[in-house]
Image: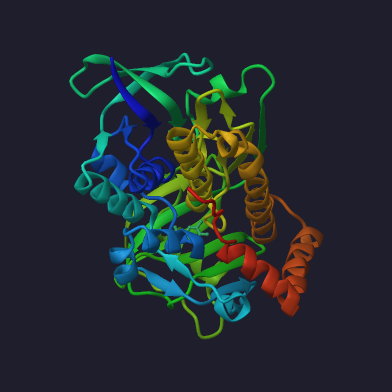
Length: 396
Ligand code: DHB
């Protein structure tokens, strides 16, 4: 049986970032990904990199294209029922965010992994993870793109295979917790051939619900509208989309720019946190462990924070036989996850209309937002959470 120090299941932000960080320490890994490279590189996801995430890209030699192509924003706008309020993120926190979609982040890490000679197996499904609780290495059984089944032994296994990770139940069996929250709304997301409405993002709320004006390039824009979780794209003809975007997000001097809509999809809203995130030699990272609703785009950044603990933890364990940091992984990662969970929940609840909400509920929501935004301390608090805290830093 072949052996590898670290087996990583999933070529998403957590898995690819971890493989790269380990490589920089001279530690080999294999990344298993059930989808094709094209599917990974084309799946449309959110688009904000916190300061810590973009610093990590820069510092580890993967930031060149992001630096060149991303929009680096120093502010966001929040529009409350047609009144637009600017939050100067950089003035308040000293930090910026980058608008750089997740699939572009993945393309950069995939290209780097390949040019570094890393093992990245697409269309390869992990069938089982066994022996992860013993003193010896774990055993991975997997089926490759040709349908051939293999086994590999690994000192450590990291499941970074998204919110339906089959490995999660191995970690939560006997006493683990999976805390969940469902929301009574979802997002209808579109891609549009249009010029930018303005440089910075607009998070808009209205008695009829939320809208987000985001961007992809100078000629492609990303817009979202609050919708019902059961809605389907055929319930949103173009006329209805434009009517609702203008109603919810236009404000004096700002009109949402229109164009040809070429992608429509409904995005689910869920929160979930798994505790602990490890059992024996098996570790969960990213969405395999936790899911946040999209408001604020914390998902990728949280995945990067997880592996900022795992990478030095695994390195110390493998190089120096010191498992202290690895043993503390859940204890170190979970508080940050709950804070991001809270921020995403809080922003979502201020900006979205609960279906059927009455005048009292709408005006209370607006008053909560205005109370935050009318205060410098409130704005700074929101800005700090939005740009994110620095990533955890540990010596290797
Ligand atoms: C985007 C998504 C988000 O959830 C968000 O808060 C900001 C931007 C986006 O896809 O562009």
